[in-house]
Length: 150
Image (cartoon, rainbow, N blue to C red; front, side, top):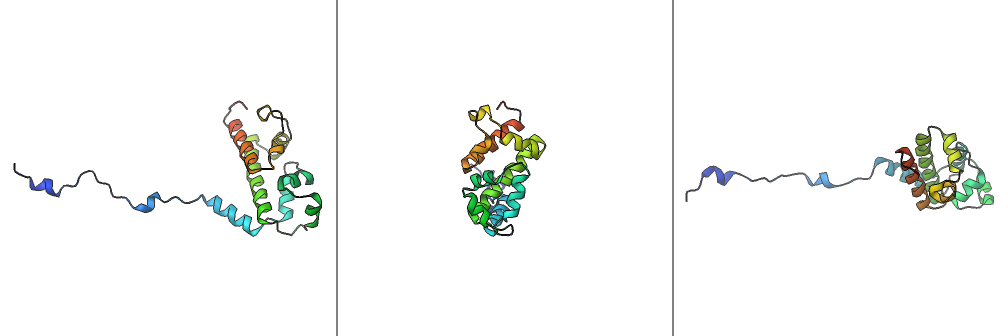
């Protein structure tokens, strides 16, 4: 059998791609949230955020897992610890999403305090004391956004 010279130089279906294309990087917002958490969020920012949806000091303390007395010891310009800042940033993200879904922060704030059937007639606010609760409430907001019965 005679070999064809062109078949010797022909390369099959080999695809060469740079390996860097498969390296995944975190979303830019994740880096921003990490940096903000590490730098600390001020008490003033946390309260302004909470008040924008009608949350009280006791509501904020419930979400942050600190006593009201400890909260009172912070001045407005004091930066919160990393763990507290992280929760404030989670709350901020949830409020932004909720305001988008309900088209206003006021409406979202009312929903947070309403008993929801999908949550066994508990308020969404009552779940915000854990990271899993934040995920649950966010998931429920996503269902509402897409018109899924919740």
